[in-house]
Amino acid sequence: MSLPNCPKCSSEYTYQDSDLLICPECSYEWKDGEQSQVDEQVVIKDAVGNILQDGDAVTVIKDLKIKGSSSVVKVGTKVKSIRFLTDSSDGHDIDCKVDGIGQMKLKSEFVKKV
Image (cartoon, rainbow, N blue to C red):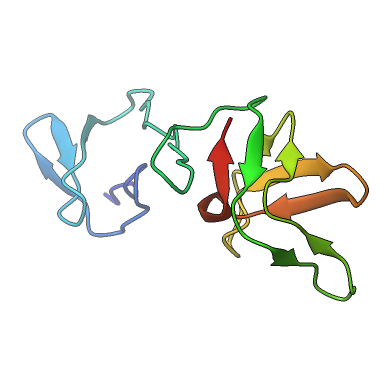
């Protein structure tokens, strides 16, 4: 019998202990056949540690050069109605519209909650 991969970290090294399945890599435990509810709630914080939420307004804390352009997003630029990107492999975890520039992605480490 093949055991399922861990629903939290996708490890293939799961083992069974009585009625529980256990992942040795992340220590997650679940019952076989149970609808696992893994906490996929990602907490995104700004540069000073404030927790951000979808729809928040933020300000840019550093001049940001725009790749492929001579434009710059200046310090203090206010960005309204941010949205989070859940599958950001490049570190840009905020999707927003910047006045005068348009749609762009930002890293949360360069913004501060208003």
